[in-house]
Amino acid sequence: MKKYVCNICGYIYDPEAGDPDNDVNAGTAFEDLPEEWVCPVCGADKSDFSPEE
Image (cartoon, rainbow, N blue to C red; front, top):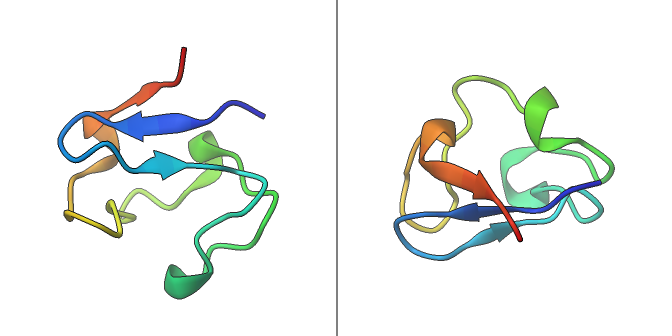
């Protein structure tokens, strides 16, 4: 699964790890994150993320 990078702070969302601090299970693709999910570091919206090259 593809990783996504926050364009604001550089946080990398890794679907293999998920975001356990925000109740996102490992194996959750970026596209399947809830719309209200935000960057756990800076609070940016999903729209502020880009696929990692």
